[in-house]
Image (cartoon, rainbow, N blue to C red; front, side):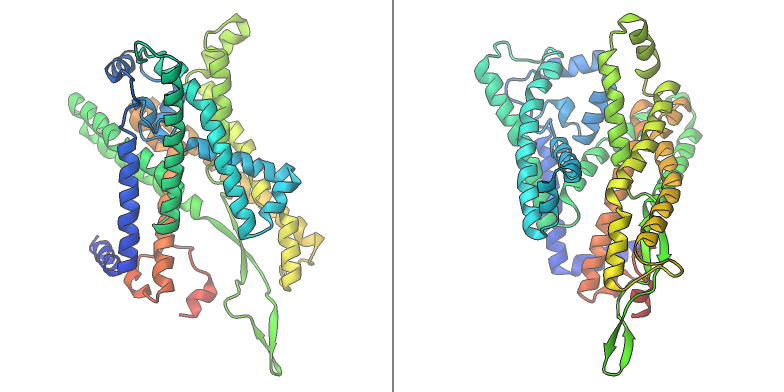
Length: 448
């Protein structure tokens, strides 16, 4: 702890880094304030009373979690950052099937700017479609609409919701450009973390009421173990040894300085996307068969409407494993990797360059993706296990699933950026003893 405090003090002494941190915290504060500004005309008292009386379904809980409560508050940022995430996913999928998008992806910086502009336009379209649905299916159903909600009110409120979502995107981009870390991911993480204190205090209150304080100690210990396991799987890399090319200097062949001597293949290359896709699909039968109409509809409603039930979590785990393989296939192209190695003069010892290298990488990725997918599936169903063990719904959500993976991934990424920033300015001594394992190549370590 003393070393951590010393490192934070030393980081704060770096003027430019200090300014970036202050800017990041200021923009995050603005985002959090926006999540509490209620839409004009909405009866928040009636909304809160309806929430207390009816509670929230799974979809409402997830959307409230990712928006930091803006969804449940009917705030100007009720749509949060999720429309932009949806637009980004659509653009990634289009990159697989549409040649024009593929061409932009290969055009470097100019192509990236074009894709970003298209993503923003697509975000506005998604917001314009989601805003009236949100008002009709959530605000109106809770009885919180104004007494005279005419065409003018609907129009201005939809515009406010779209503007709030785009303002959140702008804040995220400013954090990425001028602050520390990935802005969009940080806003999602802050939204998730904002609900952790209240969830923990609710669990602590129940433990005090029942006189079972040892339960809280056990829950904290289990939570720390789960976080540790998540960090290990996120950081896990299979290092494939490489023989790198040599360059001629005068009459000698010298190994290229700084070249990696291994090919890193992540155990969890797909990140959190399989869980997001699987949970999105699981909400479809819940919405369609919510009334339990018909024999088949009643069976689905009984077995798949409970997010803590066996049927729901078994199907969710299977979908996550399938989507992990699907998204890994999108993220890692063995043939492209093999071609790049061949062009650069690198090769895997004992494997011929070209087609044989591509087949070897493909089989290796398939093998290491299996434990990664099983771990993701296990992480996704931990909240159900925690619920069965007696943890309250709000706190159980933090034991696994999308929220935990996002929090761990974003924190690790932010720490990496802080350390890289210091290393680039020859300030490595300030972070002595605080490096996260796996962030450096062996050549980098030997060169210091």
